[in-house]
Length: 187
Image 1: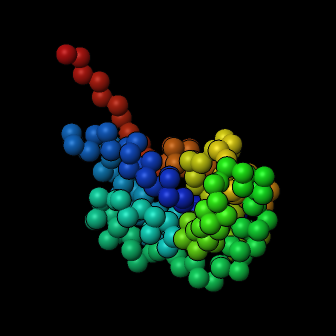
Image 2: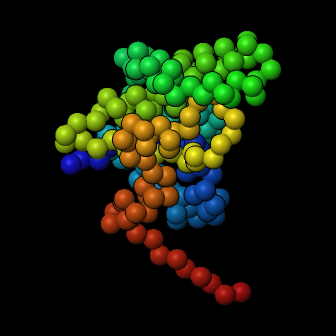
């Protein structure tokens, strides 16, 4: 069975945040990891949907965006499934945490049109086949946070989808392809 990874915005942002610790030194970790990620995206092993690409407008790594721009997966065909998921995973009890019905309606509209979460789930569901195992890569936790919709790990469990995080993807899934040596110098 082939694994295909669909990556969430938070995982991409955390990748750039966590692994750039040496970017301004010699880049011995950051540069190869970044290039590895680009290669996996370009080989269609890791998928970035258009909603995620739009959400990461804060990226300062314009070269990265350019290197993967031809591999951004469109989500227009997923809209019906997204609306279905939005209804299924709506938490009516959490409406009390919003001040007005307009605020609630705005959140619903965002989740059905611009926020990547349900599009990520819909993409994974669309990829699921007897020979394909889609895996959502997200840093999101199950921690209750008064949102109007269930969290991604909870939805994955309900939809029988596998999920993981970016460190696991890089250092467990691809551990045979990545090798780093830690050099410690005493001062």
